[in-house]
Amino acid sequence: MDSKMPGNNRQSSNKNKQVKNVGFIALLVLLALVIFAAYSKPSNLTAISATQALTDNNQGDYSKVLVSSNELEITPKGKTSPTLKAYVDPNSSLKSQGFNITKAQYTFKSNASGSSVALSLAESIVPVLLIGALLYFMLRSAQGQGNQALSFGKSRARLYGNEKDKVTFKEIAGSAEAKQDLEEVVEFLKFPKKFNSMGARIPKGVLLVGPPGTGKTMLSRAVAGEANVPFFSISGSEFVEMFVGVGASRVRDLFAKAKKNAPCIIFVDEIDAVGRRRGSGMGGGHDEREQTLNQILVEMDGFEQGQNVIVLAATNRADVLDPALLRPGRFDRRVNIGLPDRKDREAILKVHFAKKPLAKNVDLDALSAKAAGSSGADLANIANEAAIIAARNSHSQIIQSDVTEAFERVAIGPERKSRVMTDKDKEVTAYHEAGHALVGHVLPDADPVHKVTIIPRGNTGGVTWSIPPEDRMFTSLVQFKDALARALGGRVAEEIVLGYDHITTGAGSDLPNAAEMARDMVVNQGMGKKLRNQVFRTDDGMMIDRLVHERDYSDETAKVIDEEVESLITEASNRARIVIKANLDKLEKLKDKLLEKETVDADEVAEVLKGTKLPASAALY
Image (cartoon, rainbow, N blue to C red):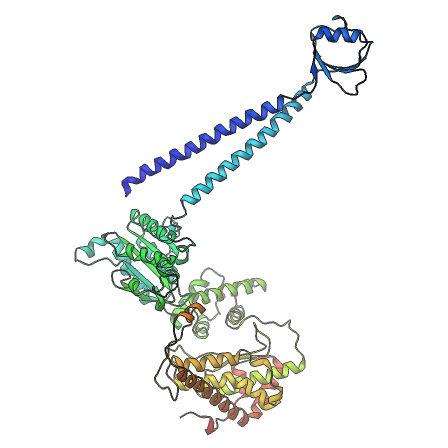
């Protein structure tokens, strides 16, 4: 394959030269035609001899004669415009040649001056130059389109490896286990003979799986930086085009380039765009995505062996990938990159604040504790927002209030203080948020209340913000039920205080969240009463996927699921109602506090709700 490449390059270069030569010849021919047309002025004057012109002139047959150098344009009597022309000796005057210039009206046109000559030349040459430039750009454009057509099947991967500032594992905080797995890949690339001598086979591929924003791409860059090898980066969607076969051609070209640069790394981001399970019935065997996937499978484990090329791929949907792609020999390793824990979050925050003027009293440990469930990208966004807020407030350093405001902006949205609210709306919002906070404070397994505000944030009219006290790997049934009751506490508080006929749309986001949580408990977690320890597959992909895949449970079971979800929602609302009715005085106090201060933090909420009681009928056993 490599031996044929120079010949192909020479053929393509010869073709390009032929195209350029033909275009140049055509340009010259057109230029000659334009010049000929410019200087060969067509004339409708009848040419006569100088002798006849002299005789007729002296006989008085002409009314006007225009003399221009050696050319006479003659207007006979009875005519309004010249119809005859004659050429005389330019070196002698008309009188010396015998012309009686009194017989007609003679007009002498002076010889062209330098400026008129230049103007005449400009009038002739400028159009030629414009037409030539137009042809030149047309030829260049046609040649560029031809090159694009020839390169349509070429890989669009970007090559890294020569950058001065390379990413290394030291610059990436957290993900200790993932870095340990990837450090072995670096050793494979650096010292392949060390492993070959033991009969070990270098892994063909490593699949990085994790939620968005956890640093999968950055870790791949770090592997290339540590190993000091070329790094080809491409997205899975860049393989797929409208035309069948283009994606497979790009795969072949990518691996051909990688083999020439071996040892190297190919990184395919969002591989689920092209590596989804085959045989879905969409597109049949000629589906472009399936053709591309087939080519990837062949390149990763075909007949050709011994190529020191490692494929790193990232996805957050490993469950939809084709089994042939995940088998050993293709993706030999699977590295799970989860959300960072508290210690890792603090380390990530320190990395992102390292190049920013951070005040010494800023508590990043407390921020990492509050940011449970945040990804590395979320933490980077918090650091950036803190810097923006500090600059907007003209601070010389990023202080604690800037960091707190940035965290709240990222977590629950920016404050919309400019939104005008009537006193009635404020009171209803205060009751609603106080209901959430009261239920969440009283129920023992609900997350502690962090802050309550009636200032609109994002798309909500107010926010009751609860944060878990520590990172959790699991969620228990009682925690789910207490979270459900807290989510419905706002609507129940409105119903108790205002009456059911006066409830508002303030629960517009609470109700869908509660319904989704209850359905997840029944369908995915097996926490229903009638359908205990049973789970039911649901497709949360695109609409076409849901239409293609049949539901794996009957209509009767679907009805039972709906009944289970309704039962959980009803139970949660009843528990919230019992708690609020038993602590109505505390609800009023918290409502008044919110109307007074608009925003109440955790300590103030705990002080106002001190002495609340949990009725036995609302407790779970």
